[in-house]
Image (tube, rainbow, N blue to C red; front, side, top):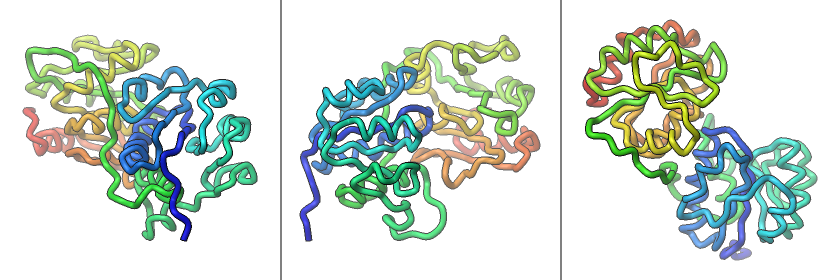
Length: 293
């Protein structure tokens, strides 16, 4: 049996998507702690680089360019993104080894075609996204082991009182609980409450509460010190979970098995029509986490 590779310079391509980026960090921890990689670079677009910039297991955060990848001189490039741009970067990297999931487009680009997570993990049915990503590293030589919580680093916001963060937005209307419900929830919390959004989001409906709409680094700082997170199934929920914050996440059509909060105390409420999740059920979930409502 061939000894698994170790002490590699590893480049991971994960261009975007907040939740996917966060859930890549368990695999990064495993690759570094096991000795599989001595240096790890993450190729990611600028809006998401703060997720990896101060991570203790990440040696470099690279812009998604061929020149940046080639300067790093990786021994192995793993495409975790799957689109045509990431495939091109993988091919053009000049790395002696290239790997990607076998179901990705352009499979002929890869020296190693990684099978589906179920085959690697020896399980049937759905697996969580964190397990799916980590399974790629297991297949490549990282010893199989439990997949840890995601890890992020941020300068914690200094506040005198415990506070809750509510993220009332989502990518599509069918994933978004009504704004009026989030407002009613906030009014019943016995915590200072901050509504979180991106700089381009409309948080005017929540103007009676504090709002945070700064850059990603500000959101990381805010979420790192929260006592409670409540929101739709979206990237900030995974950020909160990475900091070990108790979270309540509302799901509509998304699959909660694949996208539930990973390894933090949590409550998931789901209905195919997310608007039909009752306020009382959310309040009960908050109360069950020990938060005051």
